[in-house]
Structures are given as structure tokens and as C-alpha cells.
Image 1 (cartoon, rainbow, N blue to C red):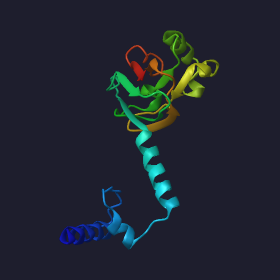
Image 2 (cartoon, rainbow, N blue to C red):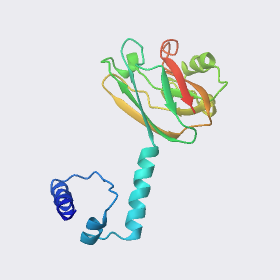
Image 3 (cartoon, helix red, strand yellow):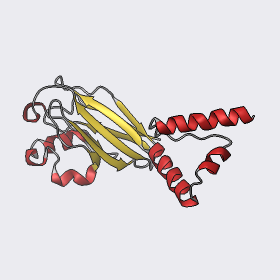
Image 4 (cartoon, helix red, strand yellow):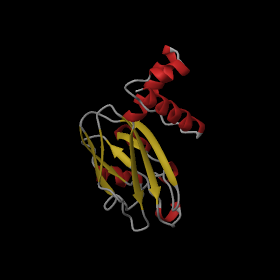
Amino acid sequence: MKKSLIAFTAMAFLFTACGNNESTTTEDNSATTEEVAPSENDATEADTAAADDSEVAELTIEGNDAMQYNVKTLEAKAGQKVKLTLVHTGKAPKSAMGHNVVIVKQGVDVDAFANAAIAAQANDYIPADKEGDIIAHTALIGGGETTSVEFTAPAAGIYDFFCSFPGHHGMMKGKFIVE
């Protein structure tokens, strides 16, 4: 038992010296608390930060020069924090082949939204009079660019997502499934 404790302590120092910033949990952490006893506030803040990080749904979607997303569904839990990242894997500029991701509320007519978006070039094809229909949207980007948006997932249900660049919504679309 004593040899195991010494080996564990040596490994802990080795990881610390190597710059390993990952937190690990052991059933018996008395050896580490004897070495450095964190305050209750420090432990609480660290636990809270770890819990917050694990609660974020990190979703990534790619769009290309062939007007295609690489996924047709995105998933999250109701009330969950979501970080949605759009990567434009093509080479065409934003003016010719711009992409975004727009997630709309249930019941929104996607075709009507897309038709209104045609006249909203100055606002990256997000019509001002339809902003109340949107749950979240990314910025419009061109080839080789990446953008992200953070939001809280709505109530459980199935929501449409699409690209609002003129002519893209027919092919670049999918479902955001919230459980």
C-alpha cells in the first residue's frame, strides 16, 4: 500500500512537471491534499467550470462550393448551451458562394424566409423583418473561413436549419433535433 502511494505521488509530480493541465479524479486523493490543500472555494470553482464545459454541445457543420452541408442533422438537449461552428471548406469567395447556418423556430415557412433573404444582401441575407423567427444564425462566410455562434437550445422539438444565401436553402438544409 505504501509503495502504491509513493508511486501515485511520483506520477502526480511527473504529470505536473510535464505541464499536464487535465484534471483527474481519484478515489483517495489524501496524498495530494496533504501536499497542497486547495481551499473549498477553489474546488467549487473548478468543479463548476468542469460541469459548465461538459454541458456545452459543440456542433460543427461544413459547407462546400457544391452547395452542400456535410450533415443533415444537429442534436442538442433542451436548455443546453450550444456552440455551433460553420466551416466553409470551399474556395469561392463569400460574394459568389457564401454560406451561413440559420436555425428557425417551429412553424416558420423556410421558403418564405429564403425568398425574403434574397433582398437582405446588406444584412448577410438575414431579413430584418424575420429576425423574430430565428433561434440562432452564424455569420455569412466565404471559402476557407470559419465562424461560430453560441446560443441556448430551445424546447424539445425538431427545427429547420438552412443556408440563407440566395438559392442555397433548397440543398443546404437539415433538422436541428432538440431532446
